[in-house]
Image 1 (cartoon, one colour):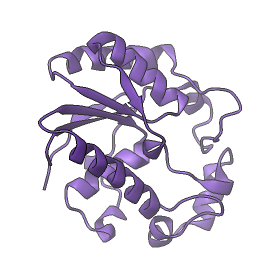
Image 2 (cartoon, rainbow, N blue to C red):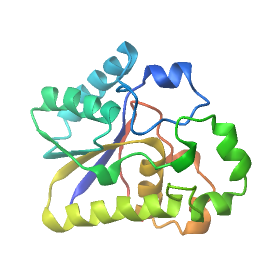
Image 3 (cartoon, one colour):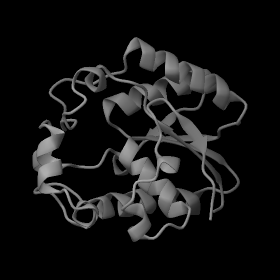
Image 4 (tube, rainbow, N blue to C red):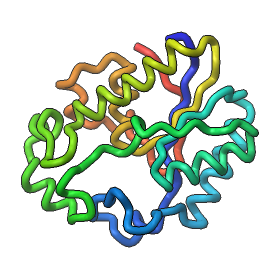
Length: 190
């Protein structure tokens, strides 16, 4: 890698508090934004990121991630670049529906990783688009500290892939790679 990367999962949203077992809809009927707690989480992260001397911010263009990026941007004075390739995984026909419907139809881990829900994408697809985005960024910039703001599943897949995990290992979602909302970390390499 030509740069140092930091990843950040967007802050807490009302949707997470009230609809924990519903898959995020997309497009959103109305923007799903950060709670006051979520804003505070990100303000605290922004203070910590000041010492990391971030040069560039790349963010998902979904409202909760955009809001997160804008809070960080104000604190560290770096304008974010929004990229649809680092959006949340597209759950297709399951968007806005109870998670148990998806889990019933995709209970097998292997199927969940490799098979696409109707009108959606598999975790394998999500991994490819996240890595394509990262590889493009890495070719374009040298010796920069780069922050990537996204969502739980895409960040998990990105970190696991960078660490050299094969698909079989990515099937077992490892707690070491899962970020809580409003959590950031520096990416380590294999």
